[in-house]
Image: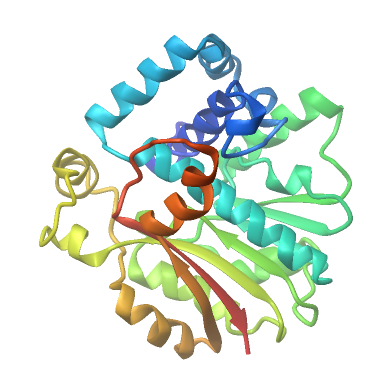
Length: 289
């Protein structure tokens, strides 16, 4: 199998966090995902299963927060937000789901009754195919795995070849992906999104530009060194106030933009969970005009 790039390797972390969360008692669980553990590679499954005990889970979260305060909690909350908004869109009659940079995310497999398209780097798509075939004997009929590199491949060509219908509304999820891309690559994605049918919905996360610039660190100096200055993995960001204009360029209207305090009010406080949630990442929900 081809060697994974750092961006490709980042596909495992979020779903491993979700898998660990499944050991939390149901009444206090932020995300519910019965496939998370099963889709992980064997070595990571062992890690997730070792977290069945509360003491181990607490130590994992504490260790994560020492390295990167709020990243663990932020990933759980953004996963829950995406699940909620996807469910709303499909309940409203949207019949296609597109997950860009899917990694090991299980949302498409958990969403029946729609045509689902997962786009990711070829190495990630191949690994995902292997896990799905191991679990089910084949990729589920409603799921299409679409190998593509956003930096070099044309997204529209790849998706339409897989059966995606531009003339029908779709729910598009772009979670935890844009920082790893250049601005040109992000604009390439949005140029495709500009062609989508009215009534389509979009969810995308972004990293705050002031963090990438080093103007505001939000207590995440170590993350900045690792992802921005040392390894140079993160390239693209936005200012919260610039999102409406960015979307308007491509014919989209912002419905909502959420972050730390919204997550606490919606997901943590009601179930009595006290977790740090990173401030550098925000989630945007938009509709195609």
